[in-house]
Image (tube, rainbow, N blue to C red; front, side, top):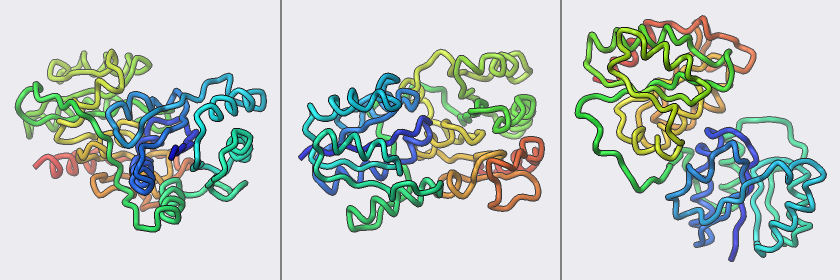
Amino acid sequence: MKILCINSRKGIGDQVIFTSYYHALARKFSVPITLLAKNNSKAKELFADDNHIDEIITLEEEMDGIGGILKLKNELKKRNFDKVFIFNSSLRYNLVTKLAGIKSVYQYPLFRSKDNIVHSAKIFTEEIVNEVVSTEPNLIIKKVNNSLNEGLKVGLGVSASGPTKRWDINNYIKLAEKINKKIQCKFYLAGGKNDIDLINKFKNSAVGKNCVSFEELSIRETLPIIKNMNLMISNDTSWSHIAVSLKVKTLTLFMDSPIMAYGRYSSRMFTIEPVGEKDTTTHDTLGKDKISFEEVYNKSIEMLS
């Protein structure tokens, strides 16, 4: 039997969050799945060591849009899938998979409005496998970096998909300095080449000599480093979801994204919202200047103790 899962969301975190659902389907049918995913999601790097997933089909730009329907249909048809599970409400993927000759098509209800990303996937998967599926994500990696220095290791997810989701880098510098006075730590700056200005500002600070940065590493190269961390403190971005999926305690700052969708799926994720918000942060909150520094610091020390 050949199983295809389609998750066309472009975020890295969106792929990470779905690992438990991919694994549940692979267990149900006793075969590894094939995953259709966008290149931006870095699925090939994330799942390179995952034996529940045997192939990643990259959704190339030329396969997108109406003109790409035939190209994508041909790509799927040659693999002779028996079943497909579509983790969205798109008519396009419903049409493509049927044109590709896949007889058993399972999908969210068509044209459904946006709802909770985690709950929708959980309900969808549980109806198929007929058992309770955990929302705890689980990234599988074979290599763990045991060469890191002894002592406490703290990740700082300073990047974000947009400025309204990014806590000011000066706050992260101040936080690292204050933590270091209380507990000696090594800091790991989780960010990419687009975050080089933020990373350089941190490196040029008083605490900068005590940090390592990720901007030259691939996502796959960062995974064993993150796995060895004692704590990840991060904006609501891919780094927080990766850390949680590697069983690392994670403190996530929600400033401008729906906390009930992205912050309540794992017991390993602790969250901080803007002052005055309580499980109410959404894309309209715009609260990056309302995050309490003292709350972040106190929770960080508590989680490191």
